[in-house]
Image 1 (spheres, rainbow, N blue to C red):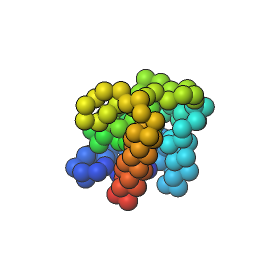
Image 2 (cartoon, rainbow, N blue to C red; image 1 turned 135 degrees about the vertical axis):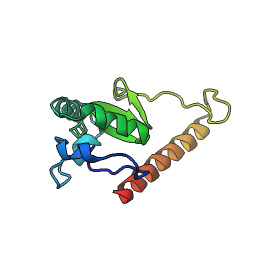
Image 3 (tube, rainbow, N blue to C red; image 1 turned 90 degrees about the vertical axis):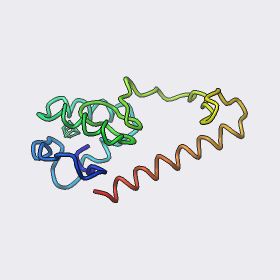
Image 4 (cartoon, rainbow, N blue to C red; image 1 turned 45 degrees about the horizontal axis):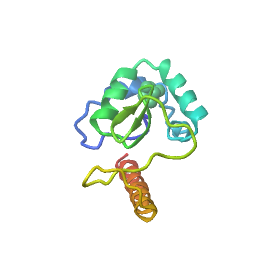
Amino acid sequence: MFALEALDGEEDLRWREQARCADGLGSLTELFFSEQLDDIARAKAFCAECPVTALCLAGALARREPWGVWGGQLVWKGRVLAQKRRRGRPPLPRDPITGEIVRDPVRIAQLRVQAQREAEQELEFVAKSA
Ligand code: SF4
């Protein structure tokens, strides 16, 4: 999403002048960072008519954007997600050190809270850098 700046300040951002979502008001921010499947689909459709889709996506991946629709793709932690998971039971998390699937409910809750905090901190940091 155009509203956020590059983290390293070295990315050539002149392409953003052509960004279709750049209305100067950030009025599309909620749409581009929504977790609702219909909003994500709308954001992707909006990007499909943007002249700078490839540059937008390349920049988002380079900056390892934590979340949002960028360049017509849903990005999560700097990677393109082929499709957002449908609502329902989330997958079991993996232990960040061993990589093994965690089955202990208390540990699962801890990891999910930790992941949520990290995502919020990343978004906060990116928003402050804007
Ligand atoms: S591709 Fe989408 S998010 Fe990127 S600048 Fe264009 S409209 Fe905005």
